[in-house]
Image 1: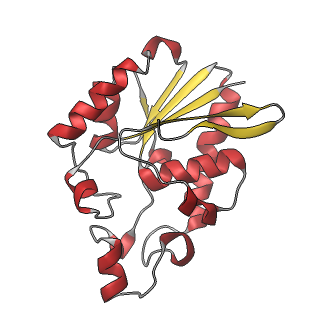
Image 2: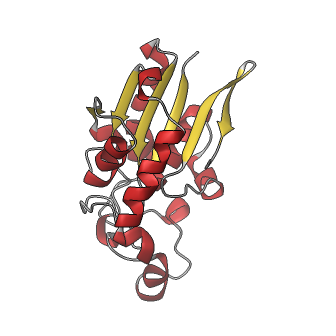
Length: 187
């Protein structure tokens, strides 16, 4: 059985402000760099047979600062495309565009649908499960990491609201006896 480690990128200017960030290619703040370096004490790159990262600078830089320099970039790990809501905060979206808006229930105009996000992150799950390695690791983003976990568990995406992912956090997915399971979340 392969264990799947999920790492969300370190802090960026927009994680501080709460702006939705998908295709905008931001780098880490100095604090985000320190968070990524702190992951070195929790992770040994030599233990991972498969290392995947989103193409975004913030994810690749987090991987590198955590000691992972030999990785494969995959578009499947990109953040949920927020379309017209890119760069906007949830509060701003609710006040100006859609009262009561929640990504998990309402989606985004001119961005990805939940089904599209599920489809590409399900490909990552299949790739990891079929890899035959003991440990795989994915460096990615907040909402995409939640969807990846839900695909691992075969849960409906609306459950994503119950799985917040902190910056520079480490989560582990695997099995508990015969069931797919979350073994650690946001450590």
